Length: 446
Image (cartoon, rainbow, N blue to C red; front, side):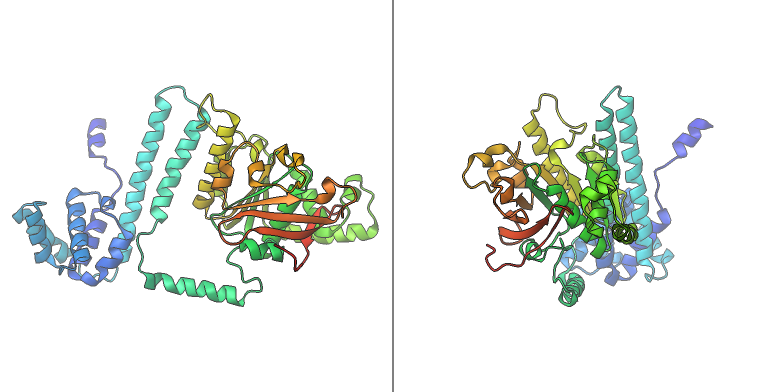
């Protein structure tokens, strides 16, 4: 009995759904275009149904008339099916489909069954990997997540779409930007001059913010995250491999309340400070900022966590060189190769998540040997691949870091690479007591 059940067991599919889709295409050629944008031949479980769908699709592309007779004739010419079986089955499809009105619902059923089969195959592959014997757990976990994610991506993927169907969304987006105060395609950084250069924080972009230690790159990243969470109504995911979640939250509280960071660290707070902190606490509680302070995170770990976040607007990683290699790293690779691989994976992650990824990075000491100590792209530590993978590379620079007589409240954000627009520097005001950066509008920006 058990063997009989095993033989009768089949992969998920809906015979009725597949037949209803094909019958609808045969009785109403006007629905063929919509169906072939939704389904692919391998979505059909039965070979005969798959061959019929391929034939109809090819005829639609070539502009040939589509009905039971023409499809049967085309399949016979191609040698796909024999004359009697083909004509009899096509006639049956037409007979059991009274209307094409619900064709897209039928197509949805077929697509879902196809996704379940893909999921079952992915599960079988993962099981086979586990049963093969000892292996790197992180590598197996990453491979398993990638297989599952590929199923979701395949299900959500859209085929080629006519421009006339894309135009309404583009025009709506233009209207939204036209009516907004920022006129930006992406999330605002909260720094208008910087926004004008990089066009805000855009989906799928990998943005690198690099500086020497102590320049304030974590503070600038938190400034940007705070503004994105406050005004973008999106979820911000912050991954800190250096500071604890309590330290980061205290920084955010100080920034929002504009209470001196030192007073918050020592607890020497005035009554007015407490009022401001209470108001800032209420404001922060309304923002959707998620913090992970696991110091052993890899790109694969971050990607897996972010996939589960709804309404993701921004990912912040502090910082690149502290991230561990994931299970796919090969033995014998030096640190430069590992960092190069991580930067490539970060770019892929940004595209997969369809969200901007702001990653912090350390700079080498090379700039300190030059008279002009402003960073250059060649100063990126450990990997030139970072420059290649990033859509935007920004450097944070404060002259007072090297010259005690310089204005301690003046900073520069240098946009050294920008796939979306111009490069150059923007001046910022640095307030160390609040660890905040703010805008300075200046005519001499370049």
